[in-house]
Amino acid sequence: MPLLLAVLVAAEQPARPSAPPTDTGFLAPRAGARVRAGTMVQPDTVEVGDPFTFVVTVSVPANARVEWPTIADSAAVVAMREPVRIVDEGTRIATRRERAVYTLSAWDVGQLSLGMPDVVVRFDTATIRVPLRDAKVFVRSVLLGDSTQHQPKPARDLFPRVIPWWQQWWPALLVLAALALLWWVWRRRRRAKSEAVSLAALDPFARAQHEFARLDRLGLVDAGEAGRYVALSLEVLRMYLASRLPEAALSLTSGELLDRIGLDARVPHDRLLSLMADVDGIKFAARMVSPARARELAAAARAVVEYVEAAELARRAAEEAARREAAAAVARERKDTEEQARRASRTPRGPKAGAGK
Image (tube, rainbow, N blue to C red; front, side, top):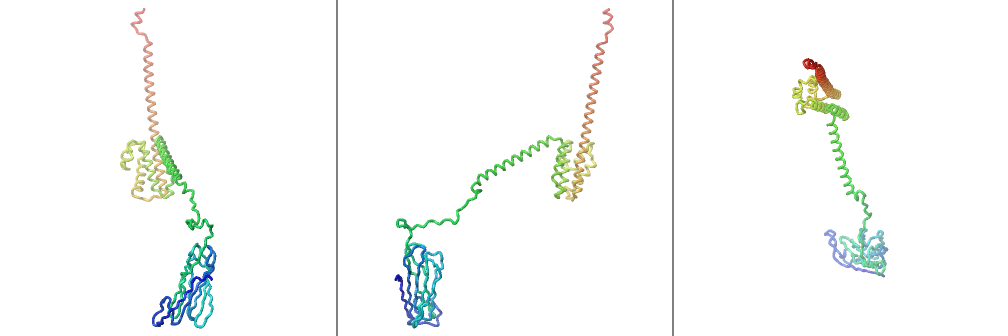
């Protein structure tokens, strides 16, 4: 029989009813009472993971209560495979025998301690602990004789780490993004420069018409920016006047501008005065303007530009006609002079004619 341990615990000590229940170790609860315990491991040699039985038998007083331990840690070297089975073997005279059958498995090799907690026997006000720490089992290796060196391998990850492709290629993606950004900035600056050059090459009237059309495409009135739409329309008018009239600089205020161009017949002074008064109220006094009124003011600014351009074209046409007339008069005068000189050269002189005869 693989009997590993047989313990006889016998002690005598009078009980003290007045004291509270305490852990008295291996002392018997009353005089003459004895506690016996025995353990058995069957089989005593197993392989890793194989089940084996651990049997504990105790003999206690008839009215004692036995608390059987369990191994709660499922990750321990020795673990329970099923709940403990308790067998009551009956009462003999003043003692009672109980047997606990544990079904265990070992998960390491060598001489292993079962790690079973103590059995607790409670009788009246006393507590007796029966130690089971000496119970052991031998676990043999299932490896070959020449490979019994037990060296556990390091733990592996549950799942292999999969690195996304964008984490592997992020430096290349960063370089491509930087190149794309530089290309976009270069193209935008080139486009802006070409637009500036093309606008500079345009006639002031054509540039003003282009800016008015650009404002209409922005849709500021529909977006609730009627005041900004009116102010920008007046700025387009001011830029046109600065291009056509040297004295109408952009740095002048509305009053100074009207004073400078007051004597210029090409400018409709009354319409320009009314327009600037309305727009200044919107720009500087934060006066509200309806979408319909904003469109009317923008149309008025465009009409002033068209009026000034028509007057400028008429002035240029008159100057061109006067220049042509002056050139024609000079040409006629020169032609008359040449004709007179030619006639004078053909007429013979009197004294020279008489001398010839």
